[in-house]
Length: 271
Image (cartoon, rainbow, N blue to C red):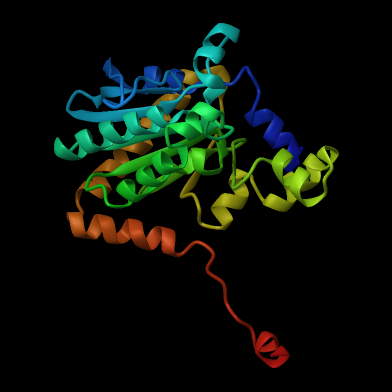
């Protein structure tokens, strides 16, 4: 049975879904977690470091992690990164560029942390810097939306050469709750907002925002992650064949095509 966008939203938010760290632990071996932004502190919502996709393929991993129980979720801000989390991610991306390692990101967030302390420490600037720097990062970047891809909080780790989504993941410019509150002043309109926003993986593929959809099989999570690893390695091989100039040009063009539309003869006659 086909699920509605609102049903997919609830599925993407389910507490039983594997967290970002679960994917990293399955896909990477010989991992070393790295901490801190070298400016303020560490953010547990961003699980990041260096590991191996294969014996001879080192890569940098960056995952937004929501936690698995109340204590860990509180420590990780329920998967809502603070500025130091985005700056830590950027520090590791620049390190990856220096050592010619690909960057693999896993996104699952309602959005960036919106508390007063985050604003005081430059939340908007941190996200904007990530988007700017990732657009010019001279190493392959691959992002997988494993649950929620909420607004700029997700885009701060999704300015990539390849973006994939799990089949019941969602990706939106604003939460449906926020959209319903703004458009209809009615939080009961969440299902309508979810439909209007076109947040599903199938919508994103149609709009060419993502390259592909990954089938979910949490009962066989190890096999699912092995398939994801295979796709990542395939993309890395293809992207590694490009020169730095070609890599950046292709990444730029990938984002330039968003929002592309055509004019019809009827449109011209109406004018």
